[in-house]
Image (cartoon, rainbow, N blue to C red):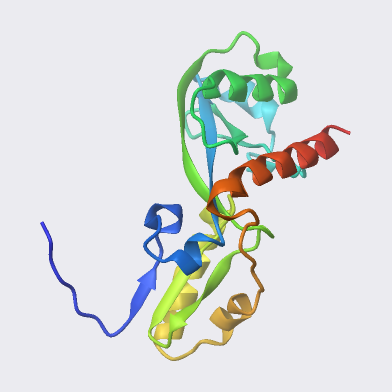
Length: 203
């Protein structure tokens, strides 16, 4: 049902789900699909042997994997990324294969849950914050780091709206370019680039 909202300030925080609503923003981010799986409960002792200090772990690769233990002693393992825009491949099996490359001792373990969704990336993988007008702010480009960054981003944009913009402006000064190739070729160009970086990870 259509409606109207009047506000003194607007914060655009929809990432790729804004679609073409704001073309100037859409050209600077790209949607990529990412996935995570949860094993069956492993029991406290077996889970502890995987990650003794209960840390959340991320590797150093360009196409990274991340994992941690859950409160009910499962292993959560994510990071399988699909840059193609197609959803035809078996994401749970591909993510499980990556999990077993890190934890081969889990080959007998069942995957209970698997899920995924689109995240936005920027060309330089830095977050993209700024203003479209003095009273219109935007936050996007979290590039897979949203769990840590979105809380910070919300605080910074709230400060900026309240008139204290120094910390927001640190991020707003980061330069961002549009993905090359325009609407037709930007995704094939990204797939080729990520193949290159994946080869670098493997080497």
